[in-house]
Structure formats: C-alpha cells, structure tokens
Image (cartoon, rainbow, N blue to C red; front, top):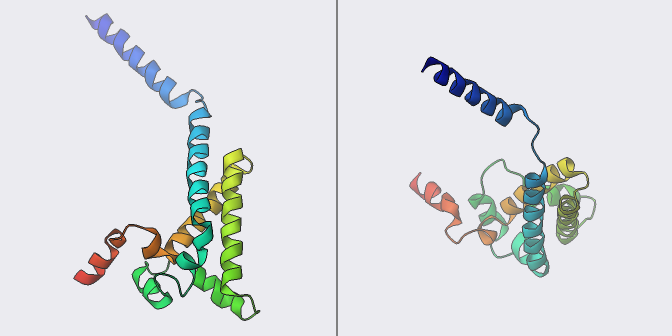
Length: 152
C-alpha cells in the first residue's frame, strides 16, 4: 500500500516536471500568430477604402465626440496629427502612413520575421486605431463605455 502510494507520487512528480520543464513545440504559437495576423490583415483589407470614415476627425463619430467616448490617456491618431500638422502634414497622410505601418507589421507577423517587434508594433497600432475610431469600429453599444459614463 505504502509502495503503491510512493510510486504514484513519483509518477505525479515526473509528470509535473515533464509539463513544466521539458521544451515545448513552438508550432501551436506559430499557428496562433499566423491566424491572428490573417484575421487582422483581412480586417485591414476590408477597411482600406473607409479609412477617412473611421479614423479622421470628421468621420462617422466626429473628433470631440470620439475623444469623449474613448478612454482617457489612451493613444489616438489625433495626438500624432496635431503634432505633425505644424509641419504641414495632413491628417489623411498621417492616417495613410500609420495604417500602412500597421499592415506591414501584420505582414511581418504572418511570415514570421522579427515577430516580437512586429507583435508589439501591431498591438500598439491596433490599440491606437481602435481608440481613434472607438465607437465606429466596435460594437454599437460602445462596449459599455457610454453606460459607464451615463451612470456617473
């Protein structure tokens, strides 16, 4: 009885060590990386003709309302366009280049080149683009943000 318990305890210890310490395959993570990149590339492709509608100051949800609906202290394209406007760079030029950099970072993720840097860049630009076109690119209920602000 004692020997059976000891044997099972050693088996459990070996299984835990195997689970925690043995090298794992990178294949599942690569499949996830490729899948996420493909979905986001398809989304970017579908939005390509409506960049001004979703992300410009005069789009579906106009500048001051979009800023009010978005979370405070989160990055938005408006911050970049305001800083580059003094150099004569238009809002559409900024939107064009930011979305192209975003698309390029997704392509890097897809092919597996410079994946960590591409993932961080794609994440940050996705966050920025979602904050810029907050209520127009998300669910119609604004993910509950309007309800939270209405309750305050």
